[in-house]
Length: 127
View 1: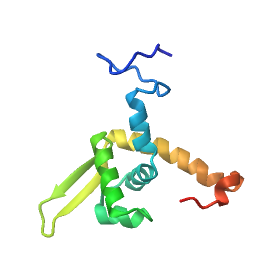
View 2 (view 1 turned 90 degrees about the horizontal axis):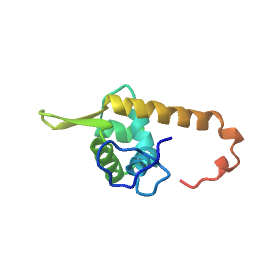
View 3 (view 1 turned 45 degrees about the vertical axis):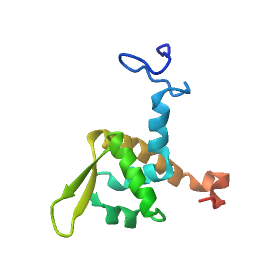
View 4 (view 1 turned 120 degrees about the vertical axis):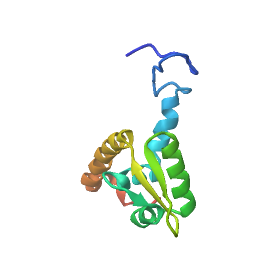
């Protein structure tokens, strides 16, 4: 592994998630947040409008969904497209980078679902 350099750095980033100031930590928190994971999973391979996303992701408030979409868009994981129709429609889809990270997150969530009965704390509702 390359020797980590202090951040902010000039030139190519040498990411090390274990370094407190590494920008990878911010992206990790966006991708692995509860709503970030669910948005990525919901948009895998499809385009959805805000209302469709909200229906698919149980329990998310409009505010949290909007905030999560803005964050993932700023990170380059999804594209927001406003359609010039009446009433106005906005669609969201993953970028190729977003599809890639969604695949990784999907592997983790799939493992959790497959092994839920083996996880001692799974019966505790803390959501």
